[in-house]
Length: 425
Image (cartoon, rainbow, N blue to C red; front, side, top):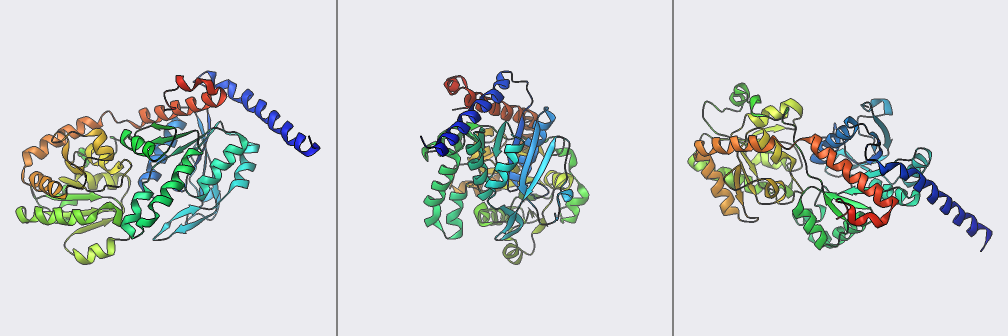
């Protein structure tokens, strides 16, 4: 063996023994973890992935673990001091570039060498990769080099978006990239059993389900505001129809237009309230000057907008979960949605909302009209929705995430334990 090869082999063996010595302390599940979270989006950015990541980070920190948060520098941040740092969270800001058509969001640039340097100096117990961009790819590569357990998350059906942007030919290459990306991790976390089955069919290997929660202290029916409803032009028992989410092609907004037109045929005084922003907003505003476009909302302001509506339309077919659905339910809104993602996981038809089989637009519109006309049914669905969401606590979701981390670490320590793990499925 050449001297250089021998040194490299010796370093690898030494590193392996150190790793196993380090990991052996996780025989007990009450040992605090050092978790490196790598994400290309995080609050104050407003989107489902950012908000979910913050909830989970806060949850694991509250449970006594520490987080190293690695993310691109956002447009308003010129230095690390501009980032809001909480106790238990160390932030590392990387370089990024604006995402086309979403200039407020940054895509992280490759940072493998920087991550190797950071993690060699202060080794995390596990790496959690939230997004699939160049920064996420660098994180998986660096974790593999250092033999650190790594968990990835699947939040966005990018391969399904292609047809909405005239690029259907990219679906297979994007799906192949995502498969290779996630199969590089020890475990991929998804929010629903349906998505777990779908990804298995695509060739994704180790997948576990960790669902989503909802903050019922924030989102609840008590925030209903008559003054906000009056500002929308809604008086008394008149109907306010709500849509919350990104105003983009993949959200199937044409169905919102058709469903609301059908509602107006039987309820001429109904008002359509669109909460959110995105590339389709300008065209929608020009087409529907009588609609209310509330723009981006967050916190209590967002919660008040939800609770002040009467009916929630959610026509998207591209969600991996759909946090807006659980937020609407917690706000007491009866919903019309397709039987996919969170709706398929949580709801029963005519118990908490109107569920329609994917692609059946006629039934979706029929459901919207039916609920618009039946105040008593809306009231029943609202009560059931409120009851359902009482059990969707983020603390429980965070506990499941920590259990998944523990399982991956134990498996990394002793691969023969695969069969004993409830996460490695």
